[in-house]
Image 1 (cartoon, rainbow over the protein chains, first blue to last red):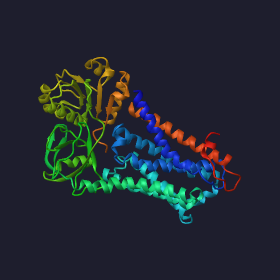
Image 2: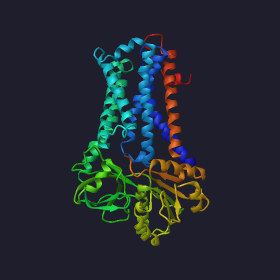
Image 3: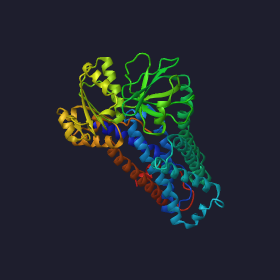
Length: 439
Length: 49
């Protein structure tokens, strides 16, 4: 736990250096004429806000060195929350100026405002649009693809507009090296997006996969079975995930992130993804024909088992069983006899995905399965309702803090499970939690 | 819990950024020269004040 906190502190300091370093660099060398406190404060917020927004490109650039220590779920959560703070800082910047210097209100008139103000407006409106579309995507009925493309274009417009506004205003950036610093940073941020969207797909195009089977599972779930075509594929750890692009080109902007459900111990590069129909793209999985070419970018994620002999407690809800199946299948293939308890929440008995296969695998493993049904059939003697503290206490041996926990399922279930583990005194460093998809 | 913990850290990070922006503004108005181009300045001088 102490090393976890120390590592966290180091990362926060690095993050703050990236945000505040370029801001305080403006104070090096000669300074322009000083202004009143509120103007300088608002300008500092603008610079810091733009730096925060720029760094978002780094958080989502799929660098394993960033995602591996924390897990992708947490990184995307931080991305969403930090974006809101960054946008708030950028929005507050002009609001302060409008209050202390009301003559700036005239800049809101796009027809008469100078270019530098128009770019500021472009940047601010783009940022507001990003937040609105991200927070209320489902209420706005935006498809994942539309949202994803808009998200990227608006992000580039926000950063580019912000930097052009800064350069147009001059002031601190009149000095060439300071101007070069901020332009360079902006180019780097947008370059990260280009790396993910252009350079990485260039590598992927040479490593396609072919769908060999689309298997129907219980619980309105379909499993895509894919084999590498003309290459050996990649090795992944059970619990990891990848970006799936079902199209003729990996350049398509909207890859979809799904967890691998297959064993990591196969030798032919086979990869399976079990995807529940939740509408949108997931509803099209059943229509994908065998033989279809797809592209996989991966593996990613830190939702993986290590070498510890500790009891592995897998807490799954619904299609959150996918990474757990990968872990269980891999243990079975490797003859791994480490103790595993699977606590598996489902709506009803008929929708328990992989129900039969779990029973087949059970004798080959040191595996205990605890089914929890929301709507159990008549005569059901097992657990019912939701995964709760008393339920885990009934099935887990003491001491709870010595086990390794893996949680995957809907957000509400993962939050509840994490709170239960907190109640049981399990430290954060002892559990990993990730959703089955990051859509 | 991880997310709740992360939320607290994110909130703290936002506060630090705002406080440092205040520090930036204070440095500017108190040490930024009386309405003229200032000389080359060592940043540590102002952070410590």
